[in-house]
Amino acid sequence: MSVPTDAWDWLSDGANWSGESGVWHRLAEHAYVSGVALAVACAVALPVGLWLGHLGRGGTLAAQVSNVGRAVPVFAVLALFMVSPLRNSGYLPTITALVLFAIPPLLTNAYVGMRQVDRSVVEAARGMGMSGGQLFRRVELPLAYPLVMTGLRSAAVQVVATATIAAMVGQGGLGRIITAGFNTYDTGQVVAGALLVAGLALLVEGVLLVADRLCAPARR
Image (tube, rainbow, N blue to C red):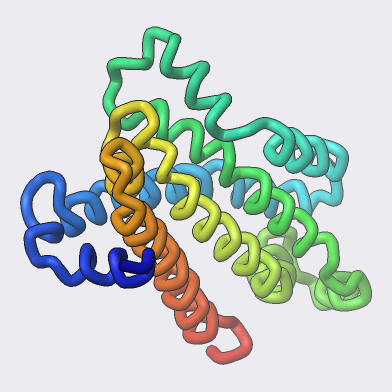
């Protein structure tokens, strides 16, 4: 039988979707780890990036953080955590590694989005008597919104795809389906697990794209 057929047979088998090792349970674990990591990364990176962009300072810091985030492999960070005292702290090592991975695109896009706001518009708003806070909320943030959302979508897809590394250290998520397939030499299961991860990443991208269009300042 061909690999696509084997993958389809695995996905269409109801027994593979139930229980603690089933798809629904692994999907919930994957969504939990990805969601927490993305929320923490947003809470850390977006305020810093937006504020530095508003002040017009910290461009070097944003670039350095982005470069470091791209240069350091996530699995290397996770491996360091797994040999530290945090190795027995549940999903904390995986979430921490994913947060460090998600911060660069969020921070960089937030900063660049703020700095690309037309300076003539900013000066006109100041001339109208707007305070710094009003300028930030009513002018700069709405104009920076598209690039900020682009960074959020990019970070979300990357986190969902990379969260499979949790399986390499014995934790949950859709990656466990892939590693289980490798362990039993079941190529169909490996492909099925990869398709599930890809499908989840595309779903997250689609949901955020719809949310972007519904919440866009121009639409409101």
